[in-house]
Length: 638
Image 1: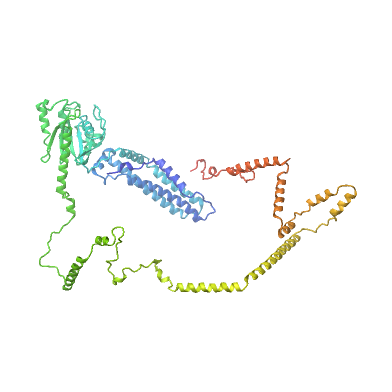
Image 2: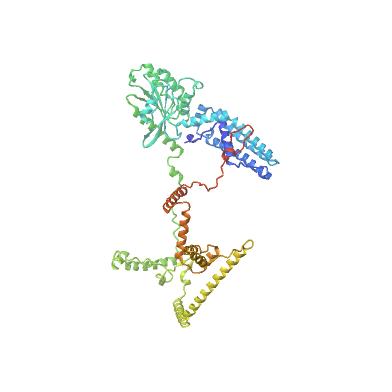
């Protein structure tokens, strides 16, 4: 069976050019600069030319591979293509496609060779442009051929799937004699039936089951009685099917003459196409007997029907009276046609020697063993067989069955089968040895020390002695002294680090230190205020709150010495409270403001939006609109 429906669509020539050029632009690099090496520029443009050539070659090769070759397909399909599409026009179209493929390959080869000698980007670009232009011109010349092949593809896809080698019934005759009605009755096909001629304009196929095999029934268009060269395409499809398909032919005759053609004309058509019925089972279906009985025919009309029996000496013509309106005689005609074709196929296979395919493939010898060649067995072997037979007979008499052994040793579920009992080993004592454990290709037992227990006991004893010696040496006192020494060293190291920081701070000062006036002590100020009759305790309290230094040195000194963690935490909390209260009247307002700030920040972090602190560079020229190559006077981008 030929898969005509799987042929892919053939685009028009202009659309094919656009497809290939667009694919070349998309699948190859697009950026090149005059500053590149000349070898790189050449490779850039040569790659475009070669890719374009490959794309055209793939398209043309697919067309040539998928379309059927007239000389290689079955003669039925070959003649059908000749009738429907004109063999010469079909071959010419495929030949032009093949020639264009060779021309495109030649153009690409020539221009790639010239590009190897180009010494600038401009020359390479012009050669590439010329190569693609010549390829496109060559493809555009195939406009007519590609359009014709697309029409052929569409028509091939609509053809029925006819198997030329299977069991087939062909319905033929004048137009409007009841062929399509007969086919609708015997198969599941739904062929259009109308009361005028040439309702069926092409081959229709239906299927039925008979004798447990599948049959195909072909309904052909009506044939008129005139010379072969005067027949049109519709009639020639029927002639092609009759000429090439090995099938049973059912020739329909309308004896009521309601089809519009007299009986004499229908019989004349039978005699004109009689050569096509040779070596085929032939049935003449006398249809529409519900309108006119066979007994109502005149003597001349009977004589015409009798003349249809003379086909050839080896072929017998069978007549059947049928009526598609009442379905009388339809089954009998169908059964007879199928049985005649089956007998003919079996007869042909017997003549060709294919009836018994399995026997024909095998060669069975029938030569008997000669009596003069008895088997030769050495005497030593016979003696061993004899001894083994005597010993085996006594052992077989004493041997217990496995079932009896199971019942004696506890029954099912308790007894475990001894799989090694009948093992044939060089030494029978090896049967129940432990199977060695293999790991990474080595036996595990080879790495096990047999004296490991003794060595372990010695190690434990040695460890116990060492523990006793350490308890007698007074290690606790030594460890205590070491801890004291370590504490002194830590304090010393802390002071050394503090000194180092002080030297660094003093060293990094720019300019000379400014001397300040000596300030009065707090006690002196308090005494003077008391002498003046004012309260000096307030000054003492204010100076105490500002006494603590906030310099880096003071911070380092506090960290070096042991401080109060709780006091430090409280001071940090007061500092945070003071920073939050800046510019706000009270603590409640500060809490509301803090809550709103956190709410806004949560939304920013959740949505991932840019904030006022994010850097943003506006894109005034988006690349996808302004990149790509443009020719002079062209604004489209490819």
